[in-house]
Length: 526
Image (cartoon, rainbow, N blue to C red):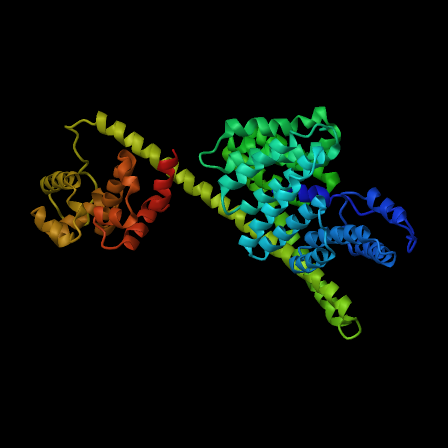
């Protein structure tokens, strides 16, 4: 849901009311470009039409016609993720000399930034954005505000995954720039504003600490288009409704989340967008899990998996078919046709990898929810234990009726249990040289008796018993004393008696279900 502006620009096919080779004057060429202003090509047929326009412009030495055609071709290469092709075409455009055409220079530098960023040339990509902004700010009026907003949007996308704060900062600057536009009633401006608000609302859900209160107005503003601008809402209904489903899930209003997810599914039946359908299934599974409705949760989890398996299979078939076609035609096709088929195959592979990424993300998200639930259960347990400690009867004695495979008298059991309680409060279990023999000697008993008492009355073997004591000790320290949260794992490991940090981390995870680092991060953000 991030590159919204680019999604808008490729929603419409490149159409032109002209016949082949019917371009003899600048006016005829300009009329086609004006008819298709801001409409980006999205298939090979559109590119062929553009090539005709470019050739016609070159034939009559019409420089602006050549530039316009190449700029629109540049958007097609971006759509196809042909970043090396983009950089090659950009060099051609730079050689033409755009001079003081700030509009074209702005878009050229934005395209250059997108290509460089995708190819991992981040420093150059950031400079390209600064150059684009410089030219965008030289444009006057509403056109200038619109172009500056595009640059801020591209900059936010650049920082996505690198710096949440920077991405969020430029999303807000983008909206601020859009609100400066005097004529906000055009469809393009309204769609840009709606998507900008969705992006900001979503960012409030992902930043730490999460700000649901600040996210809500942005989601509701976008949703209000349903009544104030129904034509805009019809264009953006699926991303808006998915955003609201997400918002209410995080708000734990699971019924609302389910309501909006179902509306996504209803509308998707006519729009046929499997990405949003898959997302809706995912949210429904999570929402029903939140309500404790395991039957519905399982139903939508199954639908989600089946849909992704179907897309996965379709992608595999497409790749296989294209590959077979490529082999069949390899000996007769020209290099140009070979290259075209190869691009289709690579696109299929890219789709397949994207689906795998989505599936991985889904299970990662579910795993994180399970881990966080374990964290919440631990916090509740600590809280209850503190209350129980305050209300505990000091005269209460341990149950000694448990059966033992070793013949130990009741009196001996009582004595050893009392000694065990003192041992548990003495923190001697933090010693690094602690062993069953040492502990038996310290409690004036033998290892056989001690091992049996721990097994029967503590339901542990000696190692797991000591691990539980040590991990509970460090958990209490981290929970009750914020200073401990600033210590390194190596120090915490040594503090509770472990020889190495690795052994400590493994023991902590075995006892709690998550790592000490996760526990510390959650306590800090609470």
